[in-house]
Length: 181
Ligand code: S3P
Image (cartoon, rainbow, N blue to C red; front, side, top):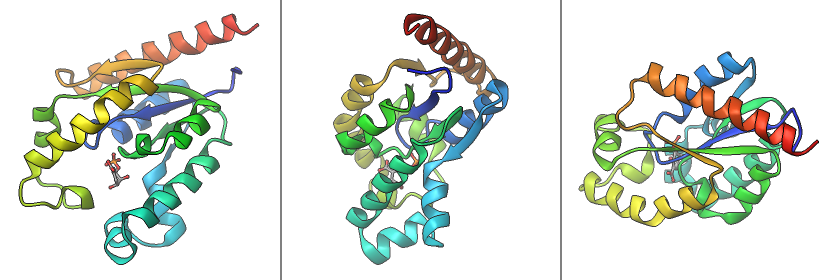
């Protein structure tokens, strides 16, 4: 792993990957990229519209391609979509480009953060809570298994979470750099 490695944020929808990622990038003096935003720009449409026009599989294909693209970047904080862990090849791609930090949050906090959200097609269901619970039960172990570090954000303010994230990212960068000399 090189000095220019990326920091990749993974975790469920509504855990703050974009908000915290932007702040972390500023502090590290890194670039920031949000994969969902890149996919929307490339396709000139929203993810919600993409899901309804072409289905989830089409989105996942574009997500996989986007993963390959952003993995070529250096010194970048990458905010992934919550479903990135559904395809193990995405993880291999991202791990080759940087360190993965899992932003872990409670079901309650996630539901509160997403209470009024209409942009996530997977959550436009009658029983949002049941669906979040189901997806979390499928994905939590994957986020844990694939990450190099975990930050539990449920009880933290944005400022606190940013500070903790910065410490983790900086320590990991330094440690990895020394370890690979
Ligand atoms: C998804 C999460 C979303 C977005 C898409 C699918 C998921 O990203 O990629 O709606 O499968 O969890 P965020 O995690 O940034 O909301």
